[in-house]
Image (cartoon, rainbow, N blue to C red; front, side, top):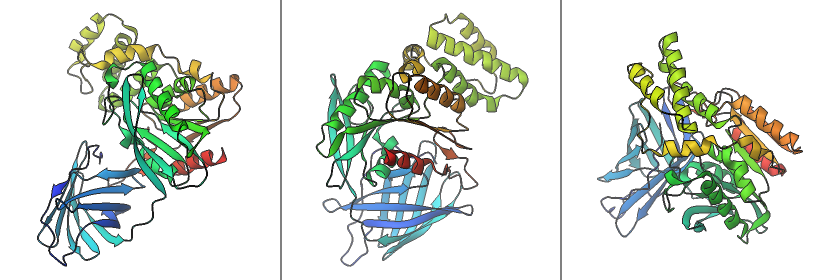
Length: 427
């Protein structure tokens, strides 16, 4: 299931009759499918002024926190329907409410199953969530600051963005894991996403680095945060740009580089494209065509090579099963790729003197994991940085998940979350 990234939608329902059971509250239970089950927490809130409910779910296994259901309906006294819309599929949960129990079936294109919840007492929050805004030049950035309930000043992590239109939701799970363990976290919407102004599609690398530096500066001003212990976490593009952000925010205390590219950016793009199209290649000639096409596409995008040969390859290869058309001429891919092609990750990593944790999935199809880790670690050590830790998780992909079983639900690589938290705790 590709999870929805939309805002919570309130749905008006019939106002409960006196004495009728209501859904609002905290529910703990599980989803099951294909002899597999996973623990899920459901939070339901009722707006007394409208009679509408909103619901979110959290799952450690899926590494999600506060994901909204797009629709929740109650019919009569006890029939409940909840809809979860993802990027690729829609799951519908149909159940029966009996006092403090909610049970039923789930239907999704990838398979059907069951769910069961029991109402549980709301536990006291271990951290405060605060909606915040700050500026990066003329751009207003909006986010959420998670502050642990602590009497002393706490360390903090600022989460950087991956590629595309990424909002604060992308890092919420890790942020809550840290906040539950006494580490503040700032997650914010990329420029042009959610509550942030600007347009990430028009941003330069310096713009993105400035946004990260502005986030660090904002957190350092929070009275409950120890300004000397504010670090950054960047995944994928965010991890690749992390040392540039650190250079723009010189008081960064540590860096967690997650799936950070350590080879030239054009090589990383070719690696990613080929891993996307190779599964559709049927013959050796198909694979050779894919290599030629990917190389030429990246040469045009990253190095402004003339398009004549790329256009001829489009004509010659458009009927291949792996083929995909180049982005339209006005797509931001072309402008950003030129900027990214000029970026040398190792040159910026060689300036980093603070502790660094590098984490990768061994089966990452977007970034060459072992080679990237080897090159970044070597650049850091050549520059005299002796506090470099590398973790590569067997069988894990770009997001540190293992291949799903028959249920379609992935699992996180063992040790990934605990290693990250343990590394922070030692520092």
